[in-house]
Length: 234
Image 1 (cartoon, rainbow, N blue to C red):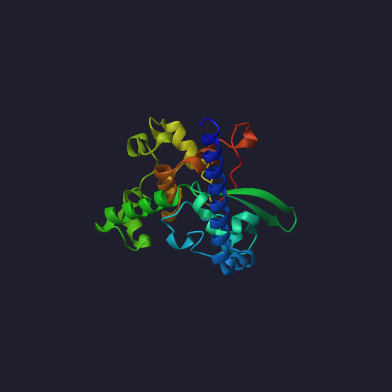
Image 2: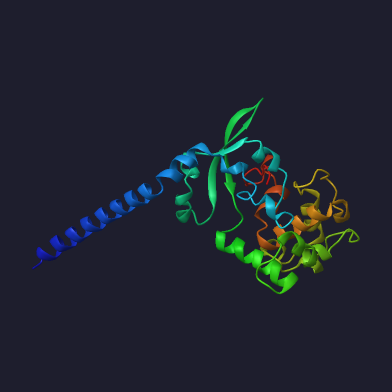
């Protein structure tokens, strides 16, 4: 009896492995056309894939031209879209090339899972129109991200306190640093919020509320000794 149970468990384990292999083979077979297409196409040049079509309901545009010019491309496995089901965190490895600097490896990351990103889109629509779906571009101008407009000189603690962990209990010094170091603007270096364009201001505030990780990387750069990865752009 003691020998019989391990034998049955061993057979069950082998059957499960066989089913898994067969399942993966079937998936590959069903996606053969997409598989070849994925290797031939650089999806990072697709406006919809990089969510450029949602801006200003996005998290920045400083690298959009590099994406559209094909300077950034996924590494081998990142090209296979059917594997995205396993990539819940939406983290990808890619190659970035500059004519004078050559190619280097970079990490691309969406600021949330697909579900979390869909939820923030729905929240924007509901706040603006009362419906879960809408024109995000128009809806952004009816949210709290747009109400802090060009007439507001500084980003102050009472306005954004509690929006995210970064501003759970913020100081004016921290917020001035976040605005001054904001990299998704051509005119960075000023702590005055009014110096940002309307779209840049909305993107900064949306990032601060949804996932401030990029703002942490920008505000505390690695070349100043902070233990964070280097932020390149969005």
